[in-house]
Amino acid sequence: QAARDPTPTRFPFAEVEAGSDTHHHVAAGHDAEILIRWGDPVLPGAPAFDPHNQSAAAQGQQFGYNNDFVGYFPMPGAVDPAAHGLLVVNHEYTNEELMFPGLGRQDLKDIAFKGMTKALVDIEMAAHGGSVIEIRRTDGRWAVVPDSRYARRITAETPMVLTGPAAGSERLRTAADPTGRAVHGMINNCAGGTTPWGTWLTCEENINYYFSGELTSDSAEAANHKRFNLPNTAYAWGRFHERFDIGRTPCEPNRFGWVVEIDPFDPTSTPKKRTAMGRFKHEGAAGIVAKGGQYVVYQGDDERFDYVYKFVTTGRADSGDRDLLDSGTLHVARFDADGRGVWMPLVFGQGPLTPENGFQTQADVLIGARLAADHLGATKMDRPEDVEANPKTGKVYVMLTNNGKRKPDQTDAVNPRADNRFGHIVELTPDDGDHAATGFAWEILVRCGDPSIAQVGATFSSATTKDGWFGMPDNCAVDGQGRLWVATDGNSASRTGRADGIWAMETEGQGRGTGKHFFRVPCGAEMCGPYFTPDDTTFFVAVQHPGEADEDDPKAAPATFEAPSTRWPDFDPALPPRPAVVAITKRGGGRVGT
Ligand code: FEO
Ligand code: CA
Ligand code: CA
Ligand code: CA
Image (cartoon, rainbow, N blue to C red; front, side, top):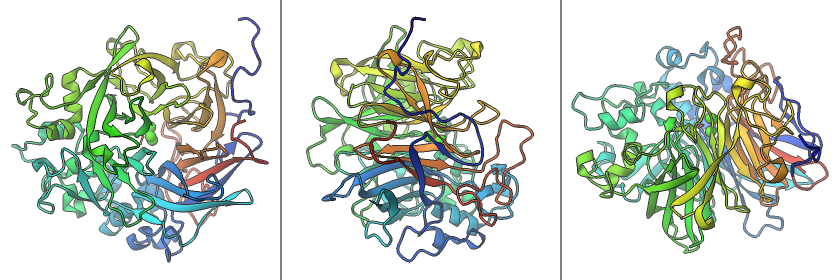
């Protein structure tokens, strides 16, 4: 190769060394400080964290478990919008074996049927959902504003409404809710987004884990639930709460799996499940304004061989309509071998979405979005996670995390690797630079994994160091300068010789395809939430499930409350590890990662 610029990227920071230990690590010249941990107070008067004497009532006032998406809203009228705002955080799921003393090893199914009690399930339900906290940066340090009037906990019991075309559908009605519009709670909220009108989009993902029981043999929901891999029964909730037993409440699962819109500035507002955006395992919902003013929300459905979607509103993002997300068109992507692609509308009555194929109404199309997309011939992807547009370039990045089940005869141009253990990132370019356009071009930005092992087939640039490659892209963020940052889920000492973390990923110029390691989580954790303040001076990241065992290491001891793989971030022998949000800033000020 010809001589090249030694720093061909827009990421001049000194890389973190890839590896895995009990601590977190950030690139030199940066500080990475704990902002809030599982169990810290959120609501005024919340009791102090005591994991040995936890209750659902206490947990419902404290920061929940497994922080995933993080969004930041500058406080209107703040002197410095990058130093005072609201932080919204998803609490995706719970790890009973790390949360509760005495439960023993980490086989979830085992715990679900042996050790769990109603009291523990109710704590779990209170540890799900989301948090709204007010935060302020003083003398360079972020802190939670205590007793804020904005503070809010949303749990698996919070009253919510279903809105949009499917709301009120017979298939959303239950004995407890004959209207088909009133739901309790949101679950497995993974990633999300923030809208220009100041709301939080939070996405229900693996909702099948919470349901148990068996449908009656004549159930009309059989094909629908099967397509959602439901029930999965990873959790014991159905033993104690009838609505999570599909034998008793067959339509309850249809009330989950949506994008939920929440106004963080009004703690009394009712969260709205936006049915127009479709029902599937929503990873995230990152939006951008199209040329014509519509709001376009890109969405991944995180399952092996599932799809990439986008939702285009009918109205304009600047219309002032607070229910903008109730009308619009959901589309699913087909990626063709020639590098072109098509967004196909999921509209009842169009193409195959007709009664002959089981769709009687638009509600059927939206509740069974996966089934509808199957009929349209959408492209089966390697687990679509975050999908995010870069406002500087108009390009869109799709994180495809992995798919070990793809067989050689199932490969295609956009999913070219069989047994795709390390995932890849696809770049879309909308036609005419318009996110509402139905055509796009695509190419693979990078195939992930270790470039030094030929059979892995990774395609990081040759400027990428031994620390700069990664596997299993999951979440991503685009900073104010249009630079892409990737968060991973699934790296470990035994799988890739490195913990999960954040990698900067150059998308432009000579350095395109270069990864650089910026932050790494403690062992057992995955990396979530990356989100920048509008001026890039703070980078919020979420450390999820620290202390789990290395699942690929057959010699690793089971991780439990008593014996986790790390006690991050407190390192107190009396405390278990705690998922936490970390605020990363540049020492001395300035943009992170410069
Ligand atoms: Fe909750 Fe797709 O990760
Ligand atoms: Ca994720
Ligand atoms: Ca993932
Ligand atoms: Ca994840």
